[in-house]
Length: 566
Image (cartoon, rainbow, N blue to C red; front, side, top):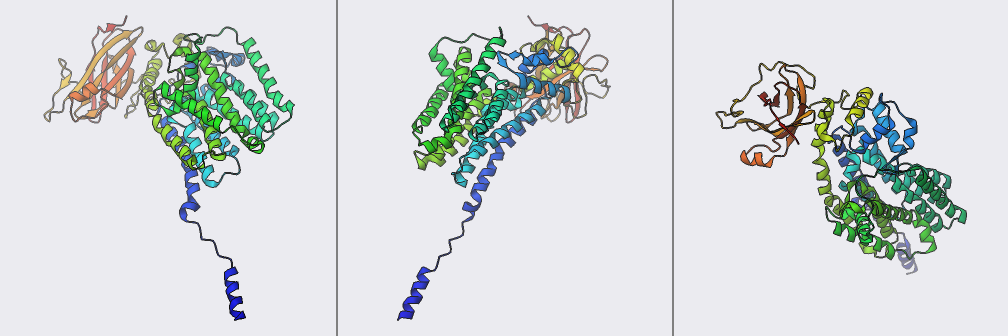
């Protein structure tokens, strides 16, 4: 009986082998973490689809920092752009112009790499007590916020991201360095951020807050504030009178609050400032509800509170300077990096120091999915502008960007610089996009090209699928002749458009595959994208516009008396 009891006790005391984790528990965090690569890959596709022609401020900066021969004026790097210190972006612009043919896409890829760097810095700052699922979820959410469709402007228009995303990268690096007690590095990174864009001045109170929450000595708390004071004072002395463009700052506090708070919540709406404002207030409210932390928790959470303060500081500066531009001033795509900073901080604090543990996963998942979906209208509006940039490239190549004064300043000064640098569109990368390689300056024989009836410029076919070459707008603007219309051959849209003179020399071109709902409604069953726009020199003599279709080239004459724009 004793032996039996002893055997039973031994069996009861024998350790049980834990059940092997299932595949979801084993591989789930890894797969969730790997999903963080999807947003940058989607943004990569957007960059590679966008035109190579640079945008807006890039041209003003290039004029400021170069001589007529394209050489750098180093002292000009210390200048300001719309009152912002712009040293590092200006230097990157010139390096792109001098060594990269001034292409938009490669600089966009550099901005993409900066965005990836932001995500990796956030991952490095995540609290160590988080479990694998929490870390993976926050990594994926961070990636969706940094590469959100709301911020597509920063990547496909690389001149913007070169300042905004670079500044965020440097700010995150400074916060991480201060949190890990590399204080000198934090100050250096803060200085670099401050000469990237003016909103980065908010990094100095953020660094001081991190030092205070960590319980550092008073001198380390005071150092960022002193350095920040010197930076801002130097900026105020050196900037001088600057043209910011547009209205002066508003003196209406309500309008300023609308701009600042809507910037903080812009990822939660497509186009509605009121929804963005409520989202911004909600984000700040969540932070307030999580503010009651122990000393140990505050020490670990310090960089996230610093990041939230940085975002709030940016909102204050933007509300003071941009509110007069209207109720949607805070919803501009380039502000995505600041609103991303706030919501990254919110998510990390909500997950790591949860007041409502059951809602942590919902908060992360809802933020990632909803903000991406709501960014669709913003992304589409930016994509819709791409043909204008392609047409500008053609106009600049032929030396007549007269119709684009709002996006290509001082062509008389700018074009010689571009030619001297071999800058796009004067680089080998320029093309009209014709499958057979036809380009500006080529001389071709049009003997085999077909021409529809001169009376109607329409060629009926036996199968009922007509050829129509419709140039409904033909207008002279300065030295440029602007064409607009739609074209179709059978059921096919045009692959490219070119403008030729009487000798067969290609003197202009443009863009095709533009939406024309009116024409598409009149041609049932036909592919969408029948519209075109083209530009050519407004020179004397007959011109012809030609379209390449899958069945070959079709060409039509233009009037010798186009309308002159007033």
